[in-house]
Length: 331
Image 1 (cartoon, rainbow, N blue to C red):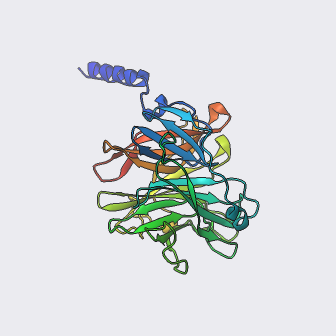
Image 2 (cartoon, rainbow, N blue to C red):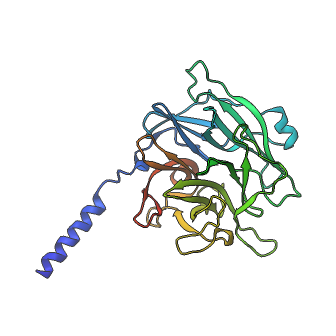
Image 3 (cartoon, helix red, strand yellow):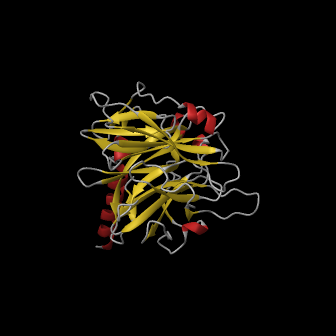
């Protein structure tokens, strides 16, 4: 009997190993690369993914993706004055404002500098076929300078349970900050008001401890802060990964499942690179989220494909909220 049980277990293991991988990520097709720092939204029957460079890809079903090179958002004149040397727009965020218009926040910077800014553009719709389509630049939202201890890139607009609007942002320097917004304009409620610190990674003097790309999700009566640790932008050699912390208030403190504080470089790993036996998609990070019309949650992110010379590639995974309340990416 023991031999029969062992044989059946072995056969089950072989069958599982041979079963085709039918995860959403393995079914993605079309124009998946290059995609860097993606965010996702749905309007009607179409999905929209915006990324660094202010690229746009669309899909009817989350599986088949088509690049939309006709999408253009010109670099405004004020941006060149605010950030000398800026060439394009990075790391956008997409959400609806209380007036129903889409709000596209975008980053302006030059690599390695915290002379940076976040701007805002709005449109009544994401669908270029509609007569009310058209992006309007709304100008500067927040700026950082070399004298500041934060870097004004990687925006994420979030509304809390009380209806207050916030902008999370940050990369390197002293970490992730949260600014209060005026809901009507989408800009800072009070430019003189100091931001709230949400996450950082303490490091010895002269050393870097990267933390960036915040995204805050409200779920189950709590707030969930997702951030990326370590280094992106090195192709297949990237060491990026994503962690999450939970808080009762949007202002924190955010803690990992083990109680570790994101203000001390803690948190719970949410996205990690492919397992060693696969080794294909490296450096998964810069997570964005979609709460779909059917109630399902998804995470969108980029990872670097070793089989395509390290190209930054679009990845999407459903999120399962576990029995303990914590999110799991079903990759």
